[in-house]
Length: 419
Image (cartoon, rainbow, N blue to C red; front, side):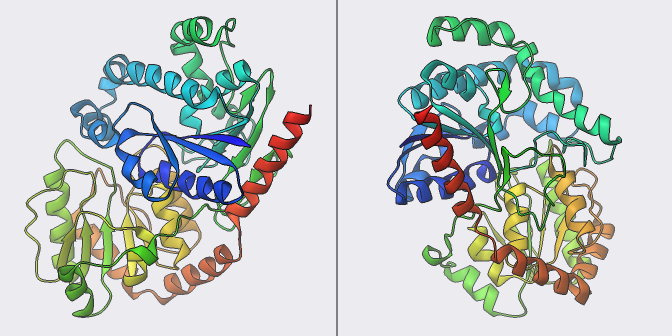
């Protein structure tokens, strides 16, 4: 089959799809991965055909409006939608069309939901694949909410995904008419909707971490995680290797692509917390804009490193609660303290805590050195956190998330072509 894999977002939104693309390609399928432009070299390293979306996510995350929004200033949302989201949607529509018009199947991240319009125009099989449990259920509300609303309202909360059709309906319909040669699309459509029904949906999350919702239908598959193994190709540089070998395994601290109006303030608070806690720490600055860090002797600073490799050298992890980072830490059985900022991060923070793998979450936006220091001490001293994290890692190791996903994609693609 010719398979188009479409994704959009930061590293955690791209990495699982590289892993999936490699597995599909190893099975003899022709795979094209469409992703943000700044991931081109990474995708190429893994031997996949790359097609850019036309968006550099690293640059976007540093935009002042995005920094304000992630810092909790919702007053800029309208401006973000007008100046950033609208032009981004136009680029994703064109990228989806370029990728999908020659494909037999289109596997797409929810952020590339226009893939269903392309599938309607081409006859390709649409498969919605999410690294987060985003498909409607009464078991828990949409992941941007952290409090159950009761089963009926929980399920109703997922209707928020249809809002983009309402907000950008005029742009979508013009594109459908001029590019896809289709009539008007639905004004409202739930995630995964296709031609008045729901397409096949994949959730690449471990059921050991989030049990499969009781009311998902048979076309929703919780496959398990899609891990991209990069450990064999990574070695620490001399300074990092020296730090790792100079004492007990450090605590990893990193907030990925999350940013703030004043990233230097977060850096100072983290440094002060490490000083107070007296733990060895490894701080990854990521895309957050943390610069000129005055690190104490018990802290080493890096920009980034593959989590599946680096996390094997640390005693515990502190992070923002991105889906990919959470999965990487749990996979290697590391106790975890989550400091969420926005979107799905509070959901993962609560899950890690409920699973007994770490302390109560602390908000990244309201990070406090004294409280973070206490959390660091608790994280490294509690044997029950280590035990539970190791138990969960054993459960995850028994799963074959990528194999399960490939099986579903091949079956759906074959059946779709035979219809």
